[in-house]
Image 1 (cartoon, helix red, strand yellow):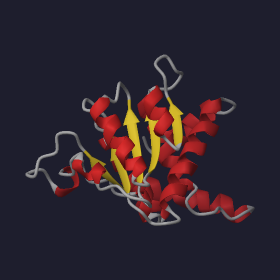
Image 2 (tube, rainbow, N blue to C red):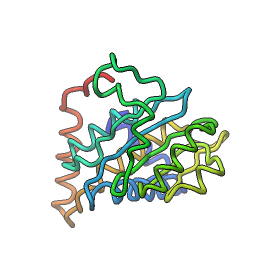
Image 3 (cartoon, one colour):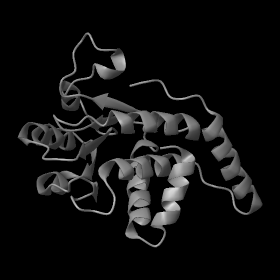
Image 4 (tube, rainbow, N blue to C red):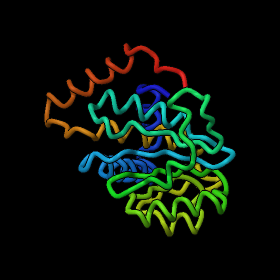
Length: 200
């Protein structure tokens, strides 16, 4: 989803709780990676890898000048023969420490093995953010959550687009007045003319 579509979606969602909720969650994400420069780990469930969110966050990190938003995608079935950016397995969660952020995206049941690894990362001091089903145990462990239950007005993919866009937009304080409009217009032009991201 490009910047124009995100803007149109935001217009449609004006007056709903989704805009505030996605911006709040994006603020928590941004706030957890900017101050201390720790890494951002992104993990999904055994049946769902959030590679699309990873690609968008890489773009937002580059466009906003906030390198901390670029995640390490942690995969359940990573193999050493995979390209480097796809070869990080669940063992990386065991190395998570204070200053790092773990973003868990769960469209379905996260499963006990993942929950155990998330619990260990939190005990080691990592900040845990949860986006998805709102599963009770994961929600209890997370420092910040954004639930997208079945039957919600938006699906998880759409919410991920809104979160990633808001995380990049708010990374740099916006100037006030006419300069703010020009900066937004300039940023939109940059989005539209930028080359496509490398394939995940």
